[in-house]
Image (cartoon, rainbow, N blue to C red; front, side):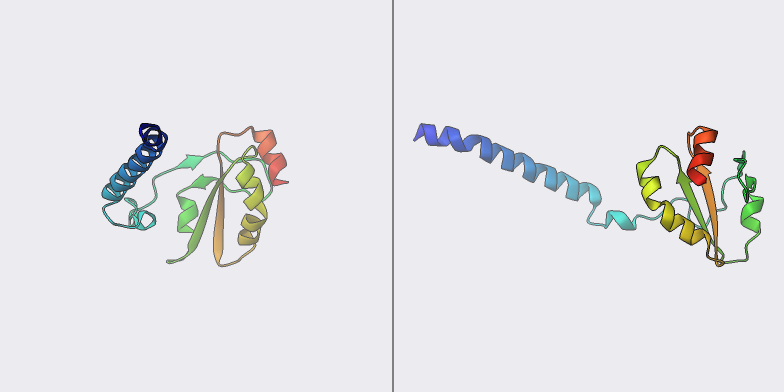
Length: 123
């Protein structure tokens, strides 16, 4: 009988730890949907930025004037990417398709990348 108890004891312990973590996670979420958390930046202007430009045809300086070119309600897509980023490579055809749309302004922000590799990625 004691031997059977020793066999099931780790299983009971693991289930108890799992239940405890599930309870704590539910308490921290407060019963709300984690994907629906409001952004602290909604309704606020974009921060003032001025960044360099890759020497690629069609690129513009990245600063706040870029956002004032559109009309009220204009959709801007800011894509943060890098040549070393595997998900960026996978999404690139989709991002290019967005860039061809006339009702969307696509802005690319290259993150922590070598300029030559970034240019190669874009071409």
